[in-house]
Length: 115
Image (cartoon, rainbow, N blue to C red; front, side):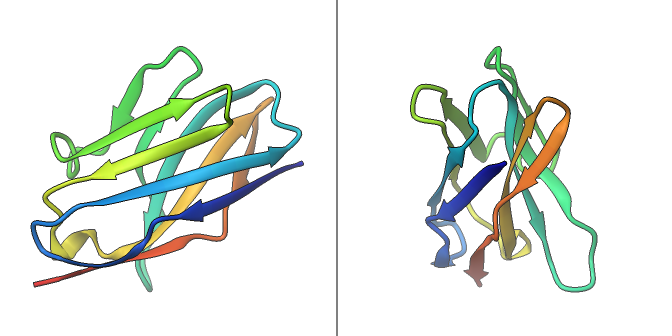
């Protein structure tokens, strides 16, 4: 029973930046992994970035060098700094946490990158 709320999405010009935030509430102890996925209409949801409890991040190849994930365990938040945005980054971005082997998802926040 973890609830996730995303914020920070919006419309941005190509080359611009956005910072997504996700706040977890409910039963937040023992959260292992926090991360971000994205999905476009008709396509499968894909991993963007994730960070484990030890602080080690993983990134999709398409965003390496442009996106940075960070985590504040005390505040139960995870953030995604997105720089040099491209039109192909346009998607609904979903916050994800893994706790005791179970996945929890936010409702998503829309990111639109115009060219």
